[in-house]
Length: 326
Image (cartoon, rainbow, N blue to C red; front, side):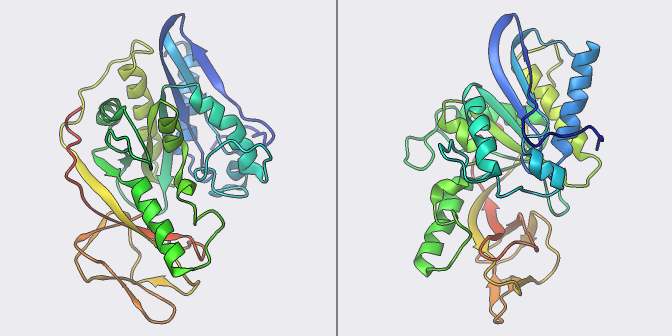
């Protein structure tokens, strides 16, 4: 990573506004400070803009290379808390991430489309977190699913994961029923709201692109390609739009399992999307209880270092949603 100084008292925001009206795209890097592939890709795009190799002609392109400066400076996931949870404007901010959110939320509201670039703990192929289908429900009402799916088809990865908010709400309900202590906020279903959920709730659409493992040297290239294709799809610049992917693996998150004790351990070093069969033992609790796969499915976001009371891993199954149609 570049040795450029990072201010923790301000957000560095780069914005280009075309003389011709068009969609407003915002691209975020380092919402989590140890996920730097987006930062590297955005800096590459900025160099192309500075050199005149990329010219914005229509709409608005906003680039935020480091969205959480304190976490980035500390080279860890968060400063005081996870910025990508409970994302909202706070009149009386209590921590660093509240202060960032008070700038980030209005910025998201001022855009139509979001591309949020992330990476993950364990080895695995890139994937996209997709929002819900169009609905008028209470949890995550949405009306731009077709546009969001069209974006997903052009970003590059062919693995798609949906069901985030429903699964998060299910975890909240379990914590309440069990009366277990949890990290503050984990008993509130809205604590699952991150950048993508926020922009959807305010009239836009957007996705989280998980570009690969944190240290995967290919992850910045995945992020860079996705930025270029989002720019092309929205016709912000004269960039060639590649043909969309036609075949996808779509998985649906079904459940979230918390780490209850510091001695809870996985039975092996799981990677995201490792397949498990019904009855397979995924982990062992400190008291010897087995954590068993309820059906055939996949281990997602395993975090062997999860804090007690936080998400240990997610469980997913194959989805019937067709990502090949937009």
